[in-house]
Image 1 (tube, rainbow, N blue to C red):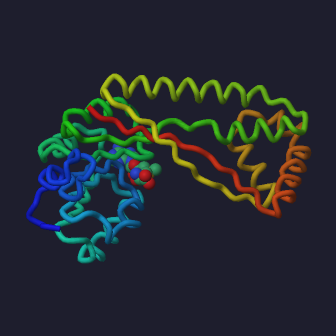
Image 2: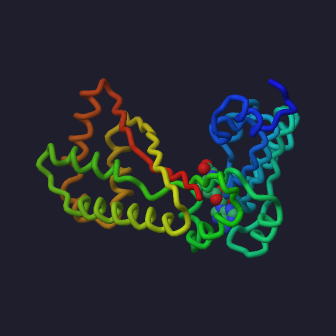
Image 3: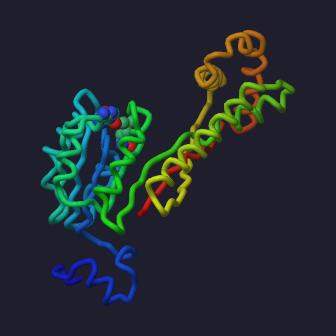
Length: 256
Ligand SMILES: C[S@@+](CC[C@H](N)C(=O)[O-])C[C@H]1O[C@@H](n2cnc3c(N)ncnc32)[C@H](O)[C@@H]1O
C-alpha cells in the first residue's frame, strides 16, 4: 500500500465510500477509558496514524493504563499516538480542552454513562466535536437477559416472580427512553447487540447473584431460597456441571 495516500484517495481508487475503508488517520476520543482493554488487546493492530485522546480521572484503572502506556508506547504501530489526560468529564474546563483539538472521527463512551451525574450533558456535547461522517459509540441500559433467565428458570419450578416482570418493564422503559434521548442529538442510530457468556458451576453463587439483582426481595428469598438453590443445582447438573448463561448488551452507534 502506498503510505502517502490518504484514506479518501484509497477509497476513491477502490471505488467505495471513504467510511468503508478508512484505514488510518482516525482521530479517536475515548471518554472514561479506564483500563483501556480495547486498546491493550489490539495494541499492535491499531491502524497506523491513529490518534487516540483518552480521558479519565485518577483513582481508577486509568492509573494502571498510564503506566502501561509509558512502558509500551514504543510497541505502537507507526504514527499511532495515545494521549491520556486525567480530567473530569463533568467539568467545562475538560471540554474546553477536548474541543480545542480537532474534531474526532470516532468517539467512544463505553460503560461511562452510569458513573456520571448527568450523562445527557455529555451526549449533548458530542455532535459539536464529531466529524460529519464520524460515529459515536455508547452502551445503553441492560437488556433484561438476566431477568428473563431467572423468570424462566423459576417458572419451571412453579414459582411466580411478579417483581421480575416489573424489572423487565422498567428496563424496557429505560431502553426506549435512552434511544429517544440519542435521537434528540443524532440522525442515525444503529443498535449493536453483543453477547457475554457467564459460567456457573455452583448453585450458591448463582443464588447470590440473583439476590444481588433483586435486593429488595428479602421476604421472597426467605420463603423460596432452598427451592431456588435446588432448581439451580438441577440446571447445573443437567448441563454437565457447568451452566453457561448468555446475556446481551446493547451498544448504539450514532451518526449525524
Ligand atoms: C466502568 S469504567 C469503563 C472503562 C472503559 N470505558 C471500558 O469500557 O471498559 C468507567 C470509567 O469512567 C471513568 N469516569 C467516571 N466518571 C468520570 C468523570 N467524571 N470524568 C472522567 N472519567 C470518569 C471511571 O474512572 C472509569 O475508569
